[in-house]
Length: 166
Picture 1 (cartoon, helix red, strand yellow):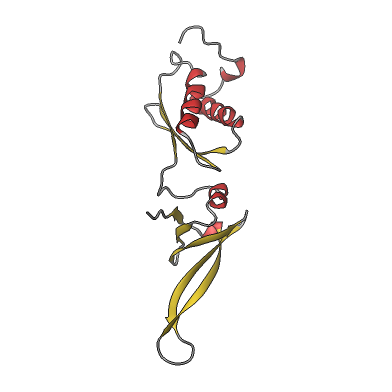
Picture 2: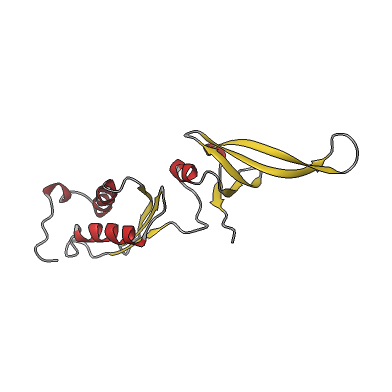
């Protein structure tokens, strides 16, 4: 790209450092958006996944893609760039994602169990899940429906996916 003026502080950075800095800058004017993942392949394909407190619009992806692309020099390093929102069914990775999904149903996996439950609370240390289960009656025969509640520290969560019902 001709006429591209690259700030001097970018000159000594690796390609990955430049991309990372540009993503941070590009997201800084939209505080409701946040970076989930950035992968750079050996062929310099940059794959960026973003999420937002109120979802991600197509225009958000376009704006971030243009910002990054317009601030990198293809003559210095040829690359391809893909910016997308995390898809439905993608595992939750950040505490911020858990907080935005309070009230929705999760399939949560720990080392010992898989639970499908409503995410009723998410703070900086753990989530609280709630669900109904059929259990044997304490007195007499048969089963009864009981309300279950479980606090799960983030460190114990192997995977959590929001379920979507239609």
